[in-house]
Image 1 (cartoon, one colour):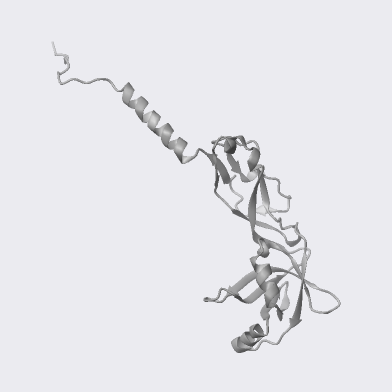
Image 2 (image 1 turned 180 degrees about the vertical axis):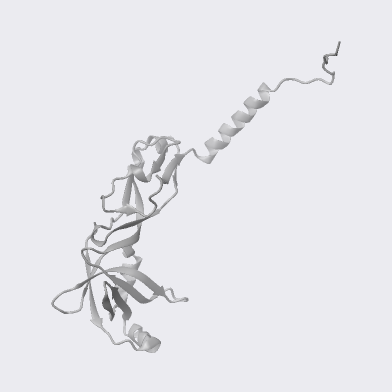
Length: 221
């Protein structure tokens, strides 16, 4: 579970694209909060702060408290970001309102621990990452910062599957019908090429000699 950050915001009156552009010129980012059967709430937040947060790893799995200078804050999860097609600057942000019982489906990054002591990697193997993120469904308050896998005992040829990590019982991978592969330790291409060449040489050495003379064939009596 990650720490919750606070975003100071102001309620705004939607005024179309022209109003949104005017807000951005003032250093504010238009945003909206929706979900949990509440009416959508239009807000605006600091544009520079938004740029920094959006570029932080794990932005879409981090909970925020929206502070509107009221008696209480609104807990939200970033849902969607619209970017300018030329400048790549954020131009609008959607937040999902969440509560204690809200379950969400999010994409969580994968972290591989203890790579420096993995015997397979120390022997020159390569960590072949199959999945850099894993989709999970979980309570909003239990979103993992990362899903961690320990590679400290992996040899070349070993694989990591989703069953090799410890998740909170309430955190469920969206792929639930199989023990899917997350990563493996593979031999480097140079070693693979050398091994293949050796096998081909061995096969050539084992081939029987042939001559141009025909072999004796059995005759019918």
